[in-house]
Length: 227
Image (cartoon, rainbow, N blue to C red; front, side):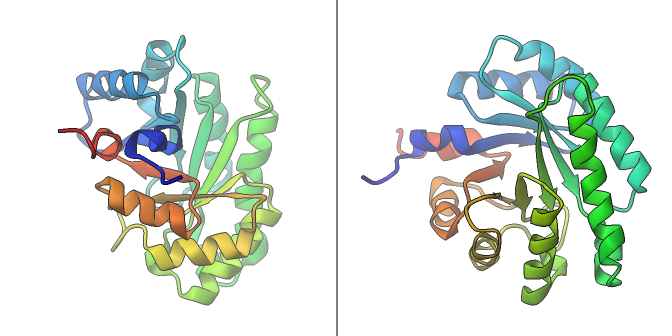
């Protein structure tokens, strides 16, 4: 049976990572997420306490970013950001990988960076089922680099690999999602994020292997068949 726009709601991280996002913007985002029953809201760390309060009686999870958007924070800072976010009510962490370390071939440093965030979620004392998604920023990577990064990320214990921050040269591409899914298999999730504006684009990502969509256009995606 063909998937319909509204069926996609539980796979969408309703996102506002705009630098100028206001309190009112986040309140609106949370209200929309609650109404449409999205998987989560993805927001800046400063708004985690607000979103956690607004969504405390909802099925919508609170997702925030770590090392965002460049991935160039130190490992210790990423670990602290993660613990702090969870303390404030975050249930999912989207961290940006250390792109520079990876491109330098410093794979142990790269893996340790990811594992520090994974470990921080387990040592938070809040919950053992915090989800960690690692953002590759695929626009900066060749095909073989996407494969290598995904292999290391999977080995480091992350729950998802994710295409993009939305701040790079381009966002999610069907071919990159396909490579990611083929590499990680079915044990790890694939999140397509960046430039997904409508249901048709989101469906293409799901067909390629994504099982989570990150978008600021979540409402548009799930109401695409409504007039």
